[in-house]
Length: 194
Length: 66
Image 1 (cartoon, rainbow over the protein chains, first blue to last red):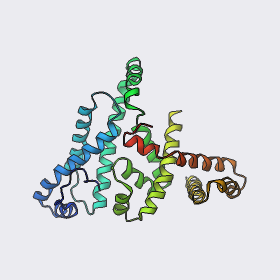
Image 2: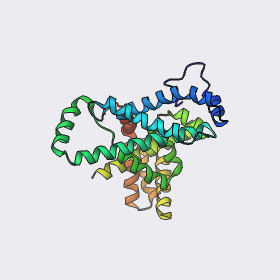
Image 3: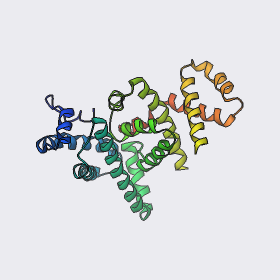
C-alpha cells in the first residue's frame, strides 16, 4: 500500500483516514509523518536518475506535494480517493518541475549535453516525466481504466495488489491492464521523442 | 474521437487475445483477426514485442538500469 514505507505495525491508516474525514485534527497529525515519508520515497524513486544534487530537489518536490495535500481537501471519502489525490499531487509537482527544468535547459544546451554524457554512465536511462504525463493524458481519453491503473503505478508507487485493492478490481485485471498500458505508453513516449 | 476509442479498444482486445496464445500461433491469429488491416496488425505486433521485452517503464520508475 502507499504507506508501506513508513507505516508502523500499529498504524491503522484506513481508520486514520476515516477520522480525518470526520474532522479529527489528532488523526490528521498522526497521518502526516507516514504521508510525508511515502511521498518522499515515491519522489526519490522517480527522481533518482535526473541529475546530480537531486537529493535537495527531491526534498523540495516532496514539500510541494505534501503542501498540496495538506493544504487541499482533507475530506477523503475512501482510501481510493485519497491515494488517487496523492498520486495526482505527485504527478502535478513532478510535471511542473520537469517543465521548469526543460525551460532552464533550453538556455543551457551545451551544458546539458555535457552533464547528460557525464551522468549517463553512472545512472543509466532517465524517466521522461513530461512524456509520461502526456502519454497518460492521451491514454485517459482512450481508456480511463488503464490510465487510472497506470497513474497509481507510476505516480502513486503502488504495486499490482495494492492497485487492485484501491480500485476494487481483481489483481489479474490490474496486471493485464498494466501489461498492455505500459507497452502502449512506452511506444507513445518514444513517438513523442521523435 | 469515438473512432479512436473504438480502434484503441480493438487494439487492446487483440493484444490481450494474442497474449493468451502460444507465441508460435500469435502471428497467424493476429493477421486473421485484423482482416487485412496491416496498420492494426503492425501495431499489435509492436505492442506484443514491447510486452515481451519486459517492463521497461517500471524499471525506469524504479530506477533500475535497462
